[in-house]
Each structure stands twice: as structure tokens, then as C-alpha cells.
Amino acid sequence: MSPLFFFLSFVALFSALGVVLAKNPVHSVLFLILTFFTISGHYLLLNAQFLAAVNIIVYAGAIMVLFLFVIMFLNLNADTEPHKSALSKIAAAIAGGSLLLILVAALRDIQPGGANATTFDSQIGMVDRLGMTLYKQYMLPFELVSVLFIAAMVGAVMLGKRETGERNF
Image 1: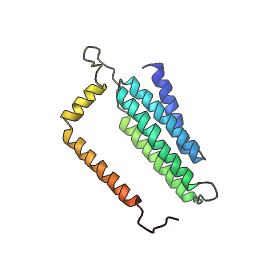
Image 2: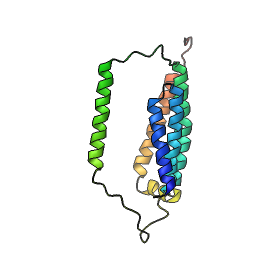
Image 3: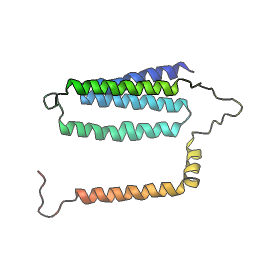
Image 4: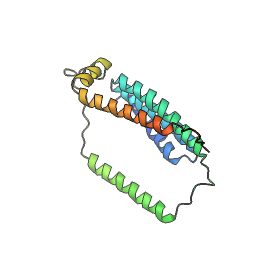
């Protein structure tokens, strides 16, 4: 394993902790953007350049702008935050600890393996290979998802369309 993998893993873990532990929601979103960039670095190490680029463009770009817009629109601060009881904090700690215990038990006997140099295909994550698989093997699901997206866009336009005489706010 390369030192870059360990560095990216370290940064990804601590930025993910920053997402959860940050008091300010804007700081939490910034930590999430850093997490997405480190995950894209892992994709690059796995020779999946297209996936890394899509992760940065879609998630670190568009989705994070949407998150920031919603956070700033809601104007979250400590005064409007409801107080959490000690029972809910204890229940959250128990649930998190149980999840950690289950993950450790499930991954305990995993033996990491390296790549075999004789059978390694360096073109596995390239865009042309992905496109050929997408348009040959998964053509019907791809087209169904595109119809679903068109229906969602039409629904969003219909919901956002103002009627004559209607006033918002």
C-alpha cells in the first residue's frame, strides 16, 4: 500500500469526524467537501478516473451548493436547536457502539489481497470501458432512469409554477 493511500484515509476519516462533530453546519458541509475530495483521491488510486471526476463534479460541486443553500436558508443556530435529553444521547451512543461492534465482527476475518500483475487490467476504470458496459449490458435500466429523471423535472416545474394571482410569502 502506498503512503498516499494512508494519507488520504487519514484525512478522510478525520474530515468525516469533522462532519459529525462540527457545531457550525457550514463547517460540517466544508468537512464533507473535504471528505468527497479524499474519496475521489481513493478512486484515482483505484484507476477509476471517471468516477473520481463525477464524484468531484456532482457531489463536491452541485450537491454541496444545494446543502449550503438549504442550511443558509434555514438559518440554523444554537438558539433554535431543541435540547436533547440524556436518554437520547445514551441511546445514540449505544446504537453507534453496536454498529461499530457489528462492523468489527463482520470484517474481522478479512484478508486483504493485492493485485496480480499478470491478470491486472489497467483499462478497467476508463470511460470507454464504462460506456460500453453501460450502453450494452445496462441499456434498459439506463433508459428507465432517464425517463424517471425527466418525470421528476416535469414534476418540479409543475410544483414550482405559479398560478395567476397566487403570491408566495
